[in-house]
Image (cartoon, rainbow, N blue to C red; front, top):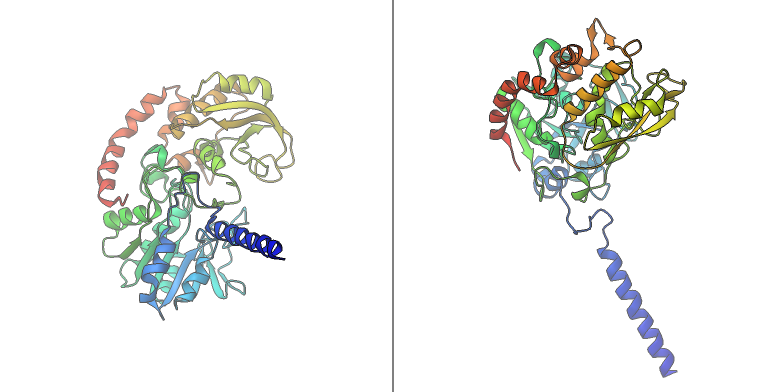
Amino acid sequence: MKRRYIQITALCAILVLFEGCARRIDYNLNEDGYRVSTGLERFVFWSAKRYRGKKAALVTNHSGYDYRLRQNIELLRGKGIVISMILEPEHGIYGYRNDTDFRASWYDPIAGSRVYSLYGIDPRVLKNLLASVDIVIFDIQDMGMRCYTYISNLKEIIDALDGTDRLLIVLDRPNPVGFLGVDGAFLDRRFASRYVSAFPAPLLYNMTIGEAARYYRGEFRPKVKLKVVRMGRYRRGMLFHKTGLPWVPPSPNLPTYESSIAYTAVVLMEGINLSIGRGTAKPFEYIGAPWIEPFEFCKTMNALDLPNFKFKPVYFVPSFSKYANMRCGGAQLFYTGGKFSPTEAAYRMIGAIMKRYPYYARWAVYGGRFDIDTLAGTDLFRLGIQEGKPWKEFVRRTSKKNRTYRRKRCKYLLY
């Protein structure tokens, strides 16, 4: 009996030990046990109680979660903040739409609030909406590129708050491609558009969303009241998988962190009549068209000897977007690691495609202008390729404005 008692006691001790160990497991920690705390987490822990009872407009989407995957709406309401409206960006509040929702507003029973689409309302209406609340909270995972529409939404919110006494609170999050630095041309106002090219910066601006808010407010809207809740333990240029945070796809076409890195080099190919894998299992990793034979195409691409990418022949059938339901030949692009210039990679790949397929490859045109000029924020990218000029010539012609930007940007960095 005594022996059995000892066995049971030992078993209980093991179970207690196991339970204790299990409580310490955090699936979001990387191999170093290191984790970044987002602006959302720090705001909820330290500052949110100051705004108890305040009516807030929350600018967010499906990326607005903390590292335990608790939604910002729930966390903010738990601190007594009244979410009187939600403003959603492209892809919607739940992040499943490939297209935008142009409805002005609707009541969402799951969120328990009225939702307004930033694509469905006029800027003047937005200004009136924000005048009806006490504070505006912005919490969205950005991608660090000017053509990614969330940064344009931030600009529009700041513009709408200009001339008011409403406080904008930006909850900072990592820049997934910050390790690539500043890259591409500074936005030429002639090629600005409301969503794709609105933020006055180079294509890759190397700032977090909080730093970008500080920069735009400081340089263009100095009277706007702004509070940026910075992250904890974040280092500039961190790879996202080193932050210890879960990767919540910022949009339906960026399912993995690897796809987001490929996106930086491939997105400018939307400016030509090429599928970039939208509507496939590998968006921004498949590139091709019905008029491409994949094996010869990959020989052309690999001959560029891009040090950070390799190309494998592939056939694919997009379910939507360019060449929907048509078999395309092309390449699967593999990112092999390291720092690179996304604009250089795109410049050289597009140049090779235009040269290899002169009777098929065309610049895409929308609304009477070249898509590539809107995406790149300049016509120098397109003209350089058309004229057969080397990449370094493009860098030379855009470097002056970038030097000015870098100098101004330094004042607003937090990390």
